[in-house]
Image (cartoon, rainbow, N blue to C red; front, side):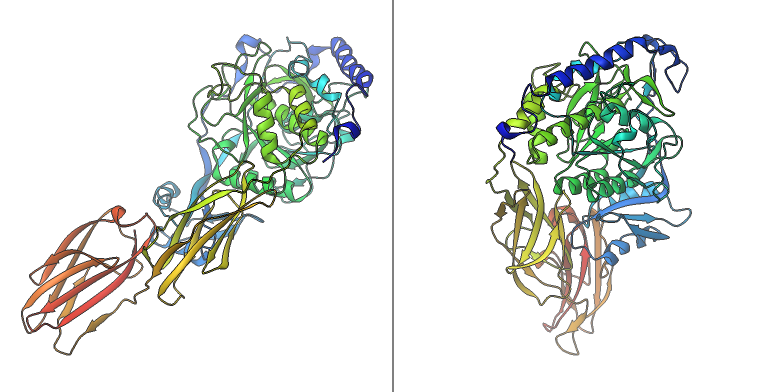
Length: 614
């Protein structure tokens, strides 16, 4: 770690430069003809500002994003689609354990989604939503620089200007020729067209980039929060500023693999996507953080809180939540988002509002922190932002303001002085299957884990040998037992944090029994099972009807039904009928042996066993 006493920016050492920068920005802003500021909609007063409050309802037709459990054979994933019309095409998001399935024409992806969401072979299945950029446009009536002093940016600059840190802007592209952006640009990538052209096709990306990292002290325009950071443009959107979850995930992966330490996504709905969160976890495993906007619906969004990314709502100059800013348990922080002065496509400047412009303020603050202390881990950034935020709304956390409004000055100072030495090992346990359970086929293995810095990888061991690695939270496994010899096996999980600390679960002992579907007779005179309505590989329903009949030249005296080795029903006639509550037998997605056994009056017995998934 850099010692604060030896840091290149000792407090006060660049005070004069910093003050001159902000003074220059203020003076220039006062002489700008705001009537010529670029806007994308008809100008309105702040009270009548234009805000897109429509919920997201568009997605890629016939497409599903699937996050399989680690270790699940890809063919097994494909097989899950067979009962629902099969697949037309499939490909994997590069570098991520996410499969994109295109369904045959005429197949309803929503119906398939509702079925597969219950399939325990998968961590998550979701639609590839097409979401809009979180922006609105307001009349330029506020001082151009109010957001910077509000978060204490000038004081933060006495310690750090984000030099050496790259911020990836996942958006519509960025105007690389803009006089306030050109000096900070580094090569990016066009996910939308799969090429290197990151020209801004809409304008939204240039605005978010300027909020984060417009140059300062250059005698022109505005200053970004992290004015010396590098800007990596990653185009994920079309010319109307709409982007798919799959493009966001690919963009995060590209950013992480190409040196970005911070990624900003100013798009509604990103916080609610497990596909995006999975990619964010990948970036965290490389020491980076992902910041997303909360959305501009003005209403409650039921997204779960996430440890993978930070979701940012918007506040005004008076520290009041903007009426159009979305809220819910997923909101982590707020930041200025009303009448923010920034760069616009074509070399101009303008005022914009929306959570689109709150999230890059936080992204830039994270860049300042990382520049001040390169040893910070993602969890350190989370914790410091929480401990230094200005609490708004109700005391402590609330769903409108999260942990509070970002204070860059306090956050950067805390980052600069923090000595990050993590020696605490993660805690992990295997929650399913349980000890002594009989298993077969593809076994869903669930783990519970925690760590003060966050878990970045979990390995599964069987009889002391590592067989599966999962580096994408939420961590879970699919253990293929079909090629194993029946018998007892010991399962162990090991969790690792970013510092390399290791935590190990206690052993869970299970019995593998992969009975082959067959009809076996004790002697040639044994009963014949003439019907059995379950078949090998079948996926059974919650309340599954089970029926069987038997025939023999002697009287059938008994038919019994065994599930997972335990007898659950008996009939003393030649037929049996039973309603099986499959969810009570084992966790959903488990594979279970089901056996019908028939006996005749001479004592001869016949059995038939199939393996089914609940």
